[in-house]
Amino acid sequence: MSQKTITETAPILLKRNEEQISAFVTFKKDAEERISACLASFRDLDLGDLPLNSLNLLYHNEETIDNYLRERITGGKPKKIDGITLSAEKWRDLVEVPDYSSFQFELDHLKAINRAHKRGQYPVSPLNLADFEEIHGQAVMKEAVLESYIKAQSSYLSTPEDKEAYQLAIAALEKITQLSERFGIQLVHYEANNAALIIQKHQIGTGYKTSLDLHLFKRALDRKAGRIRY
Image 1 (cartoon, one colour):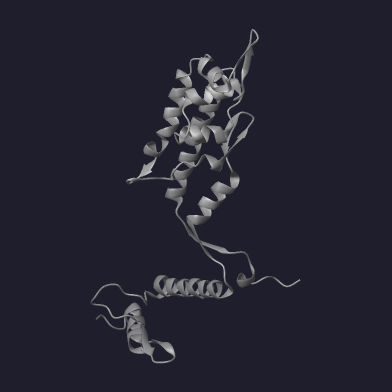
Image 2 (cartoon, helix red, strand yellow):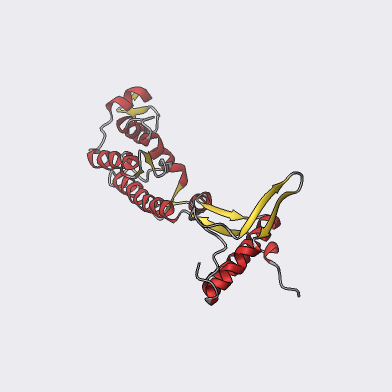
């Protein structure tokens, strides 16, 4: 079996914003802790588990805690007491709800997460509870969400043309480095007083023509060998 060339392999990772990814991972861990604290605090009310979609309503203020608890206790159904049937609305108003101050504290703490994790004036990532799932009572960010974020913060070379260009650029860089380290020849100059040994001139219809300034190249060799001192 022939060995695959670089153009036939998986995408090449060119660069990755590790600082941004690290900030997101920190945000992820804090979000998991804050969401899990909300779920645990709700369980302390002895009303069962709090589904994440219900927590999402409370998080976005689409439902108040008091209203949600009353609906949770009554089930939105009428109640018959001592032969008297109370409507769902009446029963809902009369039912006694447990003290939910601890849950309110955890929910407020969760709502403050975007302010706690900022880079500049913007959140690292606005909290989206749909990005999480509950596993054994704990909130965990979905693996696909983390993978997608890392991919968005990464730059890849995917096409055969891009990979081939990268391979040529790396090979050229290695050769330029060898010329610099072994012979003292600097093919690339950034100082205004030094001329570049490699010259590119634009040609209409054919792109760029690349050539080596042989005069400067010879002078660089002579200087390295001590044949000239200017």
